Image (tube, rainbow, N blue to C red; front, side, top):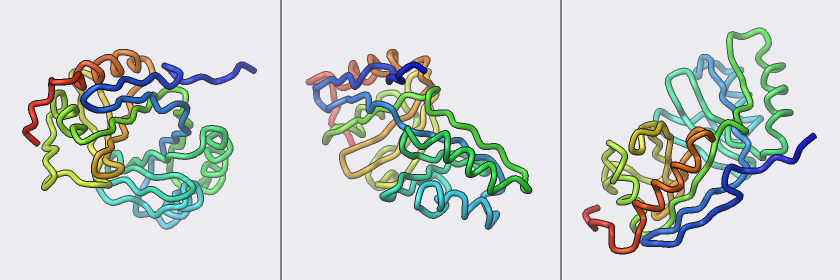
Length: 188
């Protein structure tokens, strides 16, 4: 068995904000009836958090859960445990309509850290990122430039962003260009 590696092996760019490829992250797509007690219990058992509200992400000591659509959550877990957790969820929901897939190796994760993080994302995402409209725990599935991505606020100056691994290097380059010193409009 080969050793798993992240798309950019933890590459970092330091500019107006810091851009970091976050390394391997366990991610599980779970689709089904988000109001189902069994599905809610599966989310809690897998990630140690409650089912997130619409356009929210919940974090806890075991991981997290991100609302992705009315019938989909993305579970954020330890990379090494993702396959076993996927199997546990499939067994727990075997008598209920659902889909559960370990997508860890198909995604790339980036951190955007610093006082100008909102402005970096606002350069490419058609989302109101003002502090009054977007706060800690808020999540959006959108586009960064022309790339599909999901992102959420971890704290007042940090975003986490997930995209397809196949465009991870391009996303890193795009974020790094948007985060160059002297390039932030200081509007938000």
